[in-house]
Picture (cartoon, rainbow, N blue to C red):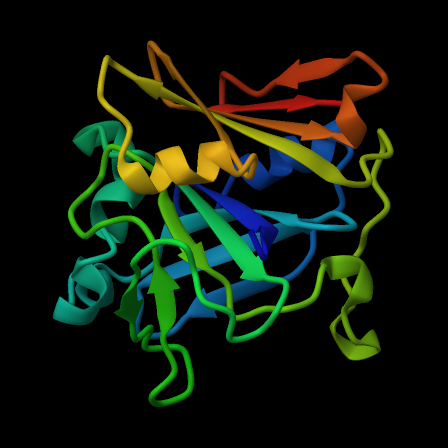
Length: 222
């Protein structure tokens, strides 16, 4: 499949106080951005081949607009109340314009240039699984243009995101889209007792892990 991981997101509290926990762990904060018209804002932590995005609710009117509503971001950003899955997974195409092996629907994100759309893989109103979509980006962070470069040096030294494991609560049946991504080795999904995201770096060669359970449904292994 001509796809690879671009980034993952976790929905967090407004202004992302959780970012301070990641910085205390040793990650360097990258860019912050407001998604005008979508009602969200973010802060990102970049690695050589992908990045981690913390996403939060920024405008309740924008996020509930008809265009944005289909993404489920309103429910995902309030996941502690709604039980929606708080994660997103973005893939980028290795060959621009290549045909995807599953159907998508176009999300005309208000912050994109007029007429531009993000292909979304997750079916509308499926809040039990991550929001999976195709990124407009075509380059890994290590290859960004000089004026768009982001900090990549962290302590501990985490270089490449080599595995993403998503844990979902309950006994639900996974969608055909997710099943296809599992078969292609792009993402791993497991059923558990709660939503949790596990990011593995550099094939876990150090044999270490850190759980952010008290603030984030996130585990980092390296």
